[in-house]
Amino acid sequence: MNKIRILWADDEIDLLKPQLFFLEKKGYTIQTVSNGHDALTQLAESGPFDIIFLDESMPGITGLETLSRIKNLGYSIPVVMVTKNEAENIMEEAIGGQIADYLIKPVNPNQLLLTLKKLMDNKRLISEKSTLAYQTAFRELYMKITGTNHFEDWVDIYKNLIQWELKLDESSDPEIQDILASQKMEANNEFSKYIINNYSGWFDNKNKAPILSHQLLLEKVFKHLNDDVPTIFLLLDNLRFDQWKVIEPIINQNFHIEEESYFYSILPSTTQYSRNAIFAGLMPADIEREYPDWWLNDNDEGGKNLKEPDLLAKQMKRWIRKEIKTEYIKVTNSSHGKTLVDNADQLLNNQFTVIVYNFIDMLSHVRTEMEVLKELASDEKAYRSLTKSWFLHSPLWSALQKISKKKVRLIIATDHGTIRVNDPSRVVADKETTSNLRYKVGKNLQYEKKDVLEIREPQKVGLPRPNVSSAFIFARENKYFLYPNNYGYYLNYFKNTFQHGGISMEELICPVIRLVSK
Image 1 (spheres, rainbow, N blue to C red):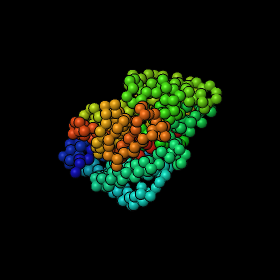
Image 2 (image 1 turned 120 degrees about the vertical axis):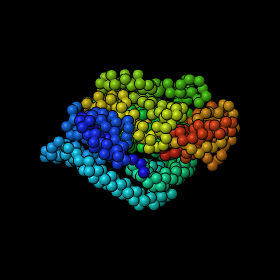
Image 3 (image 1 turned 180 degrees about the vertical axis):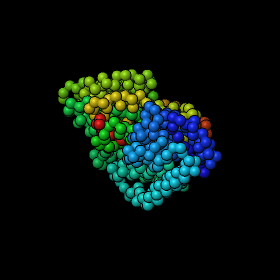
Image 4 (image 1 turned 90 degrees about the vertical axis):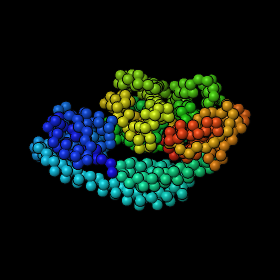
C-alpha cells in the first residue's frame, strides 16, 4: 500500500515538529512549506498529494486565499484548515471554500490522526463510487463503440472515455484502470475501421464530412472577426482533448468558455500536413498546385512550415473582404516565450493575432530522446500531469493572464494530437521513403495490410504525390512502423513513446475552444 502524502503549509512549521514526528511514525509522508506561494509551487512540482493542511494566518497570501487558488486550479485534494481561533466569519469562509475539515491550534496528534482516517476513508469511498459508476457505464460505452458509424458519435465516445480516465486517475484499483485502457484500445480499433471505410468518402461528397483541418479557420475563427473585440487564435500544437481538459480549470480563472467544439485533423496527422492546411485553408495537394514554391514534400530539404504567415494572408484575402490588422507569432523556445509576455499588452492593438506555440510538440518529440522525460511522461496520466505543470508555469499562461485584463476573445485549437505507441509493424521500403513512425509515403512499400490504411491515389484525398507511383500508408491504433534492419533496437527505443501521423482518436479528434475574458 502506498504511503499517504501530506502537504502542510504553516509559517510556524518548526513548532509542529512533535505532530510531524507522530505522523511519520504512523507511516505518513509529509512535505512542509512556510507560506501559501510555496504550497502552490509544491503542488505543481511534487504532486499529487493526498491531503493538504493549511494554516489560516500565514503571511503573504492567507490560508483562505491559498485555498481559493487551489480550488481554482482544479485540484480536488481535501484541504484541512488549521486556525488559532474558531472565529465564525473565518470558518464560514473556509467552509464556503469547500474545506474538508478544520483544526484548532494547538493541534492534538490523535485529533490529527482521526481527521486523516476520516478523510482518507471518504476519499476511498469516492474512488469506489467512481469505479462503480464506470462499471455501470461500461456496457453503454461498449454498445456505442460497436454500434456507431458517424463522426459526431466518435467525438462523444472519445470525450466520454477521457472523462472516465480523468475520474479514475486517482483510483487505487489498477484492474479497473486496465479495463478502461482495454476499452479505449477497443474503441481505437473500431475508430480505425471507421476511418478506413469513410475517410476517402469525405473528399468525394459521398459521405457527410466533419470540419477538417483546411476548414478550421473559416468555420470556427473568421466568422468571429466582425466586431471590435480583439481575437487571438492560439494554436497549441499536439494538444489532445485530455490535455485540454487538465488545463481548462486554470484557464477558467480568467476566461469564460463560450463554445467547446472539435474538428478532425487530416491525414497525415502531422504538423507539415495538418498545420499548413489550417493556415492555407487548402488541402496539401492544392497548396502544392497553387503555391508550388511554398510546398516541400517529406524528403525535400528545408523547413516544412516556414510559409504559414503567407498562407494565412492568402486565405484571409479569399474570405475576409475588409482589411484587418493581423499579426502572426510563432513561439519555439523560452526566449520567444519571454518576448510574448513582454509584448502581451500590445497584442490587443491587433484585431486578429495568431500565436503558434510549439512547446507540446517539442515535449512529445524530445521525450523520445531523453530518458528523464521518458520517466516523467511514462503514460497518459503522467503526460497530462506534465502538461498541466508546464502550462501553469509557462510564459504562455503569464501572457494570457495579462491579456485577460481587457476584453478579448481567445480561440484555442491544435493541429493534431498524439498517441502512445507500443505495437510494432514491419515495413520494407527503399531509402527514399519517409522516416515517420506513423505514416510512410514512398514507392514499392511492403507492409502488413491489416495494420494500415493504404492510399494508392493520394490526390483523391488532397495529398501531393512526390512520384508517379508514390503511395501513403497510415498506421492504425497504437502501431508504429519499423524497418527490418536494427528492428530489435528501434522496437525498444520507440516503444511507449508519443507519436503522431496515423489513425487514432487521440491524433484525429482535435479540440477547438472559444473563450472570452471575464
